[in-house]
Image (tube, rainbow, N blue to C red; front, side):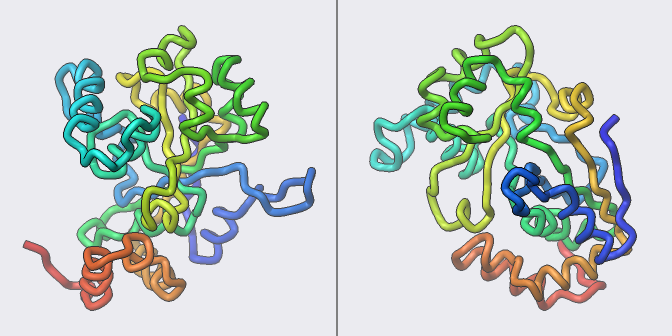
Length: 266
């Protein structure tokens, strides 16, 4: 089972999220961790593709093919399948990708942005993505080592495999990689976003991480601390207004900003 740590206070939270981030080699604080925040600590890391139910793994190719067919012609015409996959995920198409961030504060936002879930503990998933790279097939490890990187861009991944089908065939062992999307819009940039991609679309990431739990931790946010965490994030300008630039994000921020602890939603 993944290690869990239950936060005791705001100060404790800061210490925990920034612990073990010092890199002795360069004598700088350069974190090897990525984060995913969720409002409900009981929720799994199920992908939007898996939530379709049925033979969802058989639908993956068709979803992406039709997205490319019907998307506006100048969106990513002629671009890599990996950029198309990132674009599709970004706009809500079910996929095997999961959203992560390099920023612990952005993850905290997504663990405290739903006022209707303040009666439930939240969670921050913390992965040492640098260490997890060791479980990739040799071809993928060679590609990122050559670029002296810990994540893939679409161009780097294209050099090894160009489709999800080719990716799945790289190894009989299941593996996880991390893909940085292109800077499609300010939302991706401001959220400091990247995606995880598991080679087996039917495998729940929680289960895969159980076999590699030394590089995974769950930081539990007690429901009693959510209001304090949320208010301090707002003061630090970690809000929908910044993370979702535009009128929708502005409206979401203002709605939450002016809500009381006793507000109700229909």
